[in-house]
Length: 417
Image (cartoon, rainbow, N blue to C red; front, side):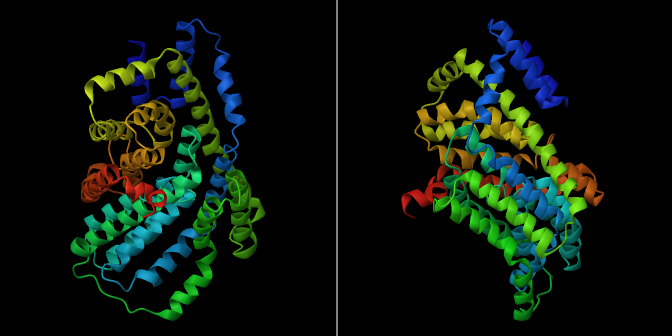
């Protein structure tokens, strides 16, 4: 009865760190253990060499978000792709993907870019429903790109190479970009005007935004080439973002910097509390042999890796409906890792599938945060927003199936493709 009570408390909106803390304390009492054991996980977490990368990457994303990177990205992608059929739809998708990777949270993308891209789509004669669905959905489509916080968090929890994860996410993100752009061409671009390509405008946009666009390239290159550790690269990225916005573009003043730091610290602080408590609770579950019992039950019910992946996807889609992505990563990853290992599923492939599932969770009620943010941002009922996102949600489900059952899409860099 007690576990069910904690689930209900989480579903009705009680802060997750309170629910996890109460569950962990209850579990230690029932196991007749010292609650101080929970603090051991915080100490181990603090000693993790990759942990410091999370606040530094978050600081870099907050700095770029506050400093005008959104406007520069919109201008560049518009100059680069705006002349194509369904050009503004390609622009919307590409800009949202890159900015989501910078900001670390898709809701920020809707708030920062929605006011720019939604009117642009409507001016280009795209149907209002299509424009609303595209902007809302595109906000969750860049979570596999560097330096995404979700990828970093999975790497820390699963103890998987973050560089491998970032490289593995490139082809799936490109595939999703092409699928959404193709759908926009077939469905949304009817009657939309075409714009001539202007090399001068592209050159001017590239001069203004080249430093923003080089950041993901630098992150991938630094990690894949082994030039820097994750922590060193995170420090360089944060310094790069501060210099870019404060000294080059001069969009952030010293006085306003404290609000950028406050925004980053708030997110990181809440995340670390949840991470530490969830890892402590996971250790208690391992001591109680819960994963072993779960594995035995799965072995009795599931006979093949494909069947396991199917049931895992269904479970993760439900989790994504009920829980935010960061909480879900730290809770479900330790439980799924031994099960996936039993069925021979590569941890990098597993990570991409988990994150893809949780991306979709941004668009599914009752906790699909993008739906509520878009409802507030565009002054539309939540149901209308959800109805507008349905075609894109179905498209992402097809994308998820491809990622799940074609491991080479995630492991292309290891398979020589």
